[in-house]
Structure formats: C-alpha cells, structure tokens
Length: 259
Image (cartoon, rainbow, N blue to C red; front, side, top):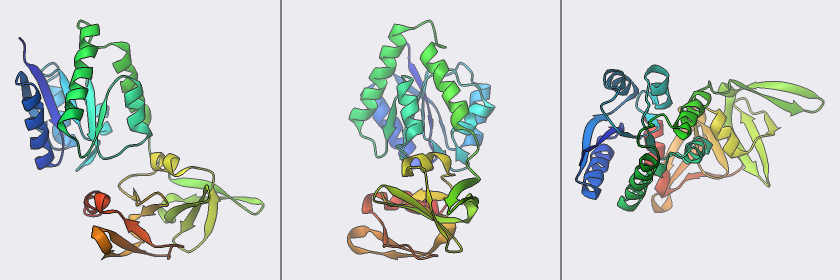
C-alpha cells in the first residue's frame, strides 16, 4: 500500500508534534513529509515539492501572516484540511467546497473523521486531483485574501461620515445593534453584524474578546487577572461594561497580544 504523504503547516511546535503523533496513531501508513512553521518556509517548500505530498493540514494564522498568503506565492493542487482556532465564514466556505476543518483544541476523533472524508473524496476521483470542489476552494481563497477594510461609512444625523478602521477602539453589540466607538470617544451605529465585521477586519489588529466586544489592540490600556482564570481588559475609551476574556480563550488572547 502506498504511503499517505502529509504536510503540516503549523507555527506552534507542540501542536505540530501532537498532530503528527495523532495522524500516525490513526494510520501507521501515514508519512509526515514536512512540518512547516510559517508562510515563508511553506511557500518555499511547496514551490520545490509540487508533487511530493497528498494532503495538507494547515493552520490559518501563522507567525508571519495568514496561510492564505501561501496560495498567492505557491501552487497547491492537493486538498487542504484547516486546523485553526478561528471559526468564521472563511472556514465555512472551505467546508462548503468539500474541504474539512478542525477547530483547536482538536481530538483524535476529529482528525480521523477528516482523514476519512479525504479518503472518500479521493476514492470518488482518484485520477482527478484538480476536481471541481478543490478548484472552487482555490477561487474562494483568492477572494478571502483580499485586503481588509480601511474605513467604514457610518450614518450620523443627516450625514454619511467615513471612519478610519485604525481609529476604531472597539465594536460593541447590545439589543441586536452594533456600535462603533472611536479612539477620540465618538460613537456611531454600524450596519454590520459582529460576525461580518470579523471577516472584514485585520485579525492582527482586532480580536473578538467575547460575544459583545470586538477590540482594537491599540485601545487596550491594561490587562488584569480576574476570577476563575479569566482576564479583565481596561480600555481607552472606557466601554459601557467590563470586557472579560474567558479562561478558554486566554491562551489565544495572549498569543494575539504577544504577536
């Protein structure tokens, strides 16, 4: 039986090693061809190994950028299974095109399910690596890699006012209305959902703190330890209620702040 050749693109060494171990525990016929930590290394490897793999497990947010950048610089014609902490519309688009995704922290059952999905896909079109669902995925990536919004046009009285994204301190939702507060204290209503905003904002600058708040790192004045392993954020300007980071999201928040 031929080896199933897998490439891992993941910037956390512990996660990469754990994923490799889980994969080879599930199927001893799996060969890990490469474990690549960032966009730069992955781009170089894929450009030099166009046919040296069968499947890719890939994180979305890497140390030097988003993994979508790899697809701008290298041709990847094999299926990709995304392993990520970000459950957003981009992920959903990949799933709709027949490519699976796994949310961190993952378990063995989820990895095995994704592998089985890949094997079924290959069994249906073993001679056609460029099958239509995967071609559609690549087109989706081109769309998703577009630049993030630089400004928003908001209603204020009888006017439309452009608000620069960089000057927004945080977005806040209450009673199905989303508000935007600027660094200089102005507040406006905005006609987007929080989920839509997450898709349009640069994740290196904005973080979904909880269901109510999407925050700009530049507006964080102080981070305090809170009860039960949570964190409390002090913001400038001050928000209408306390912003708490849940214990489960603390590692992701720390990684975001430390990047």
